[in-house]
Length: 199
Image (cartoon, rainbow, N blue to C red; front, side):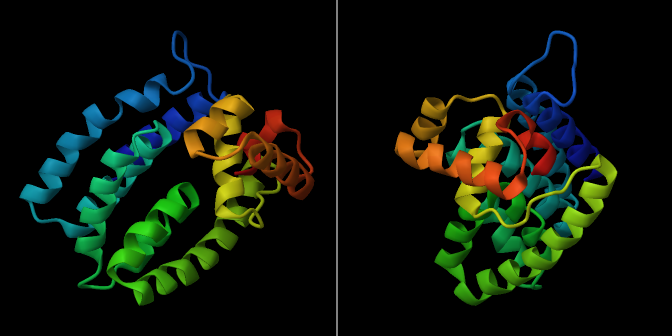
């Protein structure tokens, strides 16, 4: 699980430009991560380690989501939800709301609205703690007041996408994307070029 999270964090840092790797840029590292993560999922499943499988599936879903492959992300989210619900392992899902909040909400609400409310409550607690810890490590103020859509737009902007590319990927109008960028800059006090540090 920790190796998978390390790989994801490294790929995210490369995608946002906060980590430089020779010959690697943008989402190229993110797009190959499933080849490393899918065998780990198979191992967790065969060994019936439910918590590991949930974490690995959610990490893989985050990778697919960030790579623009939501169909594959949904498959992993749905399986993770089916594993988490019987034992109410909602904290494992809440941890990933920061990365895929709208997608998790959509998938979980289809199955259990009350479970989504609990995941959302746990995410607020997790998000506040992460903002304090992550902000102190980075020396920046992590913004927790962004809506899920604003966070998604800001993440794609941090990945170096243009407003037009973001609008196309998220099926939004260009004016909605520009508004989300402006709101994020106002809430964070940071320019677009520094969005990676505040997410």
